[in-house]
Amino acid sequence: MSTERDVWFIDRWGVTIEDDISVESFAVLFDALAGDDTEHVVDDINDSDDWFVEFTRRSVGFQQAEVGGEVVGALEFADRDEALAIAGEFIEGDFAALRARSWKPDA
Image (cartoon, helix red, strand yellow):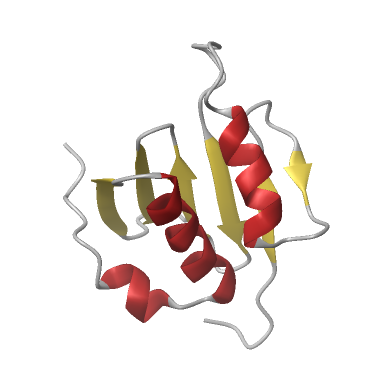
């Protein structure tokens, strides 16, 4: 990974958000997924090393976006707190903690 790591959000509408990258800010985006919209159901957190986590209401995927990049897998989180903990690990760049979670290979 590079020394300088930029992180940004992409909300459920596809809007890139580069300011106030924090767990608290992501919580607002994540909570908006709880509505009855069945089309716009994903929030992403991305970084400048081409890694991202993609959240739905109940699960998260973790992979690298570059061509041939690593797909770590997906997992269903227990609750909002676990989802926000995963988001926090990604935002902070704590990939050891992220990789220690029970990821299942994508089907």
